[in-house]
Picture 1 (cartoon, rainbow, N blue to C red):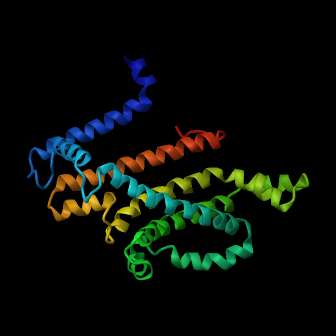
Picture 2: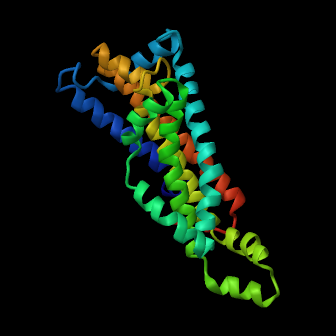
Picture 3: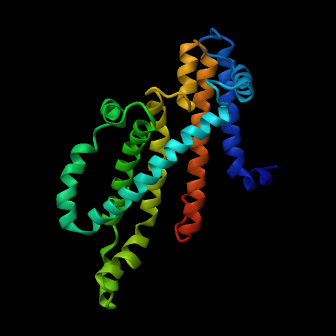
Length: 259
């Protein structure tokens, strides 16, 4: 028995943790108003209902698809623009002196604070929702890639220079691979932030998306519907993070897992 547990602890621990949480949730829900905190069974029944009956003309999978599309577009733009900018800031001191002051002013502004200006600039269509997710992902992508480049071991660069490597070779062949773990941390955190921002983005006049399900639950005074949307956000976010961790293991095989 102990051998079985030790061999399968990697998946047994998360399953046990989630199971304990659901049991605790069920016990608490027995002693409170079901309209305040519905039981796990009631939330599951609501999920099945939403899966089979469209909300706002779209099934629950369709709403997840709309949210994912917004997030992935924003995330792709954040990586496309933020990754090279962050690496360049960490590599080139002149670029750092020019860009860093502007970035430090904009960085503390939370994505939600951009909602009014996003509506003013882009209206309540898709553009404003993608923009809100982009802002959250972009800042984290720059910060992680910049930090990773700044903390590359100088001895690696000196060794490459001593072997006659050009400046571009030092950058692409030594510095960028060395900061790949930090880049992947930025990619994962950036995608997670974009996914978290999608709820706020979909509060801006959305007619589809996971955030729309939560808003509909609030308007209908159905806490079970709200919790379905919240659980969906958590599950999809976890799947996205797990996908990026698998990609990191494939692209950075030299990085040892933290035990």
